[in-house]
Image (cartoon, rainbow, N blue to C red; front, side, top):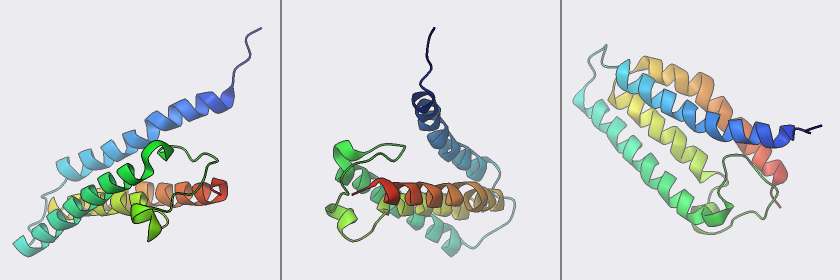
Amino acid sequence: MLKINWKLVFSFWATLFIPFLYLVNIYVAANFGNTIAIPPALRFLGIVLGVTGIVLWIVSYINLGLAFGVLPQKQKRIKRGLYKYFNHPMYMAIFLTFLGLSIANASWQGLIFLNIIILPLLFVRAFLEDKRLN
């Protein structure tokens, strides 16, 4: 009889599902925005936050190297690059990216999705990561 490794099944689907939620946030912020007029300075602030988030996201990814994974795994804590100064710079970068995108697009729906779905997900991932890292 075939034995199913449920941990591996969960890992596979979570690896697909978590980035999918990020794409949903991008879709919501980009397509359900611009319903209210915002000052150009606020739109510019959103763009700056979004670009800053993307740059930090990429730098965090590079700093992680082979330690990158969607789900936390037992391994040594990275203490170089941005990880020397912040515990979870990639999660901060993800939040900044989506916050900036939502502000730049005047998308209150994007802000709601970010705060109800993405932010709790980032906190849970950070908590689980802290428990597993040495």
